[in-house]
Length: 452
Image (cartoon, rainbow, N blue to C red; front, top):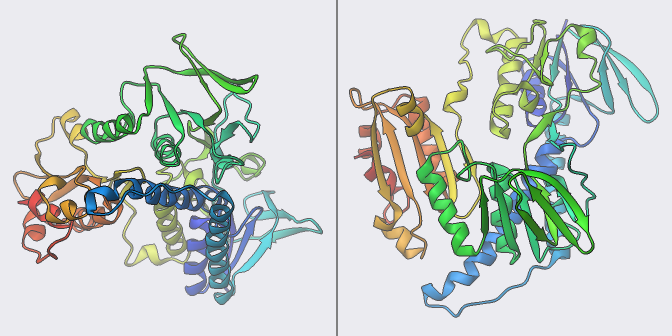
C-alpha cells in the first residue's frame, strides 16, 4: 500500500517534496491556502527580483554614455511593470501546477490543522475534510515581521509585500532594516529615482556579511545619493500630514513620502495544531534534525518554518531530502544537507554572493586560511561591460588547497558563485579552478585568477 504523504504548504519546499515523493511511489496530497508556488516565493521573491531587474535596466541606461552611446533618460511604466510581474508569477504558478498534476499529486485549496499526529483537518470554502497521513510535512513559510510600534497601511507605510509594485512610486522613501531585503529595496527604489534613506541599526549595512563586501555596497549607495543613518534603531513610523515620519532611538527623525519595513519575518505556524500533534516549536519555528524531522519522527518541517536558511534553494533541497527520507532512501545512498555550503545572493547593484566559510568567521574561530582576492577592474570583460565594480575572494585551506568558501561582489555574482559553490560542495582544490580552461573574455576569469 502506498505511503500517504500530506504536505501543508505549496511553496518551494512542499512542491519539491511532493514531486519527488510522487516519483518514488507515494500517494501525495498538498494543502495550500494561498497560491501553489508559495506565497513568499510568488509574492516576495519573484516580484522583487523582477522589479530589481527593471531598476537595473534603468540604471544601466544612465551608464551607457561610457560605452560610446548617448545617455538615455527612461521612465517607469507602472502599469506595464505590474502586468510583467503578474505574467511572470502566472507562468511560474501554472508550470508548478502542471508539474504536480503530471505526478498525480492531489492539490487542495484550503487551510490545514493537525488534529493529532496522523490526522489533518482541511477546511475549504465549501467543505471540511479529515486526511489520514503516514507522513506529514509542514512547509507553511513565513510572513513579514511587524513590530507593535508600526502599523502598515499598504499606501505610505509599507511591508515588503506592499511593494510589488507599490500603488505609486515614491518620490522619497525610508527603508527600515539593512539586512538582505532592506538593501535590495534601497537598490530598487533608488534605481527608480526615489530619494532613499536607509536606517542602519549597526555600523555597517549587511551586518552579518564580510565588511569588504558591505563597503562596496555602501560606496555604491553613497554614489547614488542614498542617505545612511548608522547606529539608529527605528522606534516608530507614522503618517503626519502628507509625510511619513520615522523616529529613531537616538532622537533622529526622517521624513519621506513613504517608508518600508524590512526587519525580518516570522514563521507561519499559528493555528496549525502543532501542539495537538506534540510537535516542539521554538519561537514559532519547528525544531528539526538533519533529516528535517521534528521530535515526532513522521512529522517533518522544511522551508522558512524550519528555522534554517530562509532561501528558496534551501527549501527545495530540504523538500527533496524529506521525500527521500519518507520513502526510505536515507537508508541507502543519501547525502545530508549541509547548510554551511549553501550559496546565497543579494540582488543589489553590484550583486553580492557568497558560499561556505567566510574570512571573518575563520578569523573569529582562529582557523588558518588562505585568502586570495582579485578585483574585476583587472578583468577585460568587466571593462568591456563598463562596470568594473567589485571583486572575487576565495578562501581555501593553506595546507591542502581545498576551497572552503568565497565571496563575489559585482555583475552576475549570483551566477558566478556557482563555480565556488560546486568547489566547496565537491571538496575541490584551488588548482582545479586554476587549471580549468575558462572562456575569454569573461567575468569568470577572475575566479581562476583569485584561485591562483
